[in-house]
Length: 332
Image 1: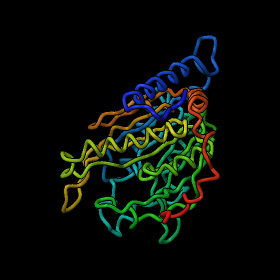
Image 2: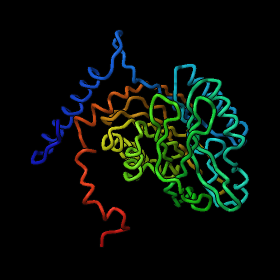
Image 3: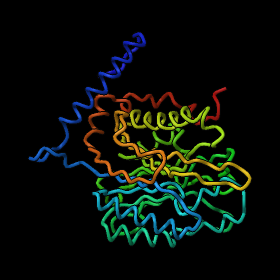
Image 4: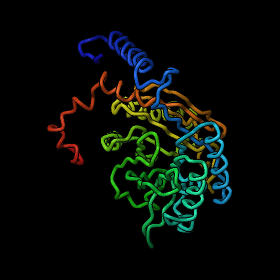
């Protein structure tokens, strides 16, 4: 099943729809199957969509509660939203906010590691890391089912936009693009929020063997822009991540925070929620609401990765000999 050139728009759309439908049918038929007809490569992914309070202790307690709920519903890997221990402090450049940072290992990894060990699950958590005096990162930790820090990823792409002043706080990551086994039923790739917009990040993480790309996220509207630009902004955010799933033949999971967080002297940010999981054909498997806390637990059949990559062999057909300019800022 291939995408073809030399077709009109209607023909291309019909072909694409037929291709997705064909892959979906094959996904349902193929994979290693038990006698009861279920795949032995199904992993249940849990996403926590939550509101964040001012007090970090309150947020950590809420996260523990939400993770327990996800595990009770069958989640084997649970991912929390970006910087869940606090309000999104990057709305302002304020040196006092550095006090929110913690070491890794530290208090949060101790609490979440104990929880992961108790529940026998993998937890993916985004933390404000104090690495050294004056060196801070936006960091994801992967805690395995024994409670150990199995992997770390430091956010590589750091934004500097109105109300998203992250360059003031975060040093760009230096660990590269990584994937971790963590004793989980799926190889976990971790990226963070602004990384969502970069196909290079998704590609390199997939090439490291990731089967699921997790994007813990804190993204929302400036309330004054919502009416005019809100629908387009959200659509672009979801579309680009669906494209990462298709281009790399992987599952993508993005947990976002939800609710309005005020900012002194401004309108603050209305986080749009709508956390979601997408399959390797780019289809939305589940999407949370836009206005309330919610926990998604989504079964993902990893056999779909092999099917997608053999029917849409994008990795096979890459011309790695021709991509030298990708390491240049601009090919002029």
